[in-house]
Length: 105
Image (tube, rainbow, N blue to C red; front, side):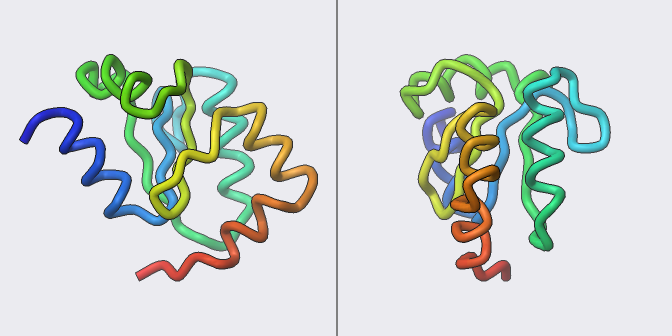
């Protein structure tokens, strides 16, 4: 499986997926920490991929997603955006609506 297939599989297998630096318990950058804080405020589990531990994903995902930075939030297979967009959608209530519509298996 090449890296793009791996990324596609990860995105398709997780209704809420955060590509981040570090882990939710130990974020390695402030932007990832903010994204985790927002996602943790909802009553839904989310998956994460630490791009620092996965240099192939860190290199290829920006091309795959056409989004240059991390974190990247994906919901139901669609890129939502990075930290600023996550915060904006959280503050205006749109992120809650997106997450409330997800059925976690």
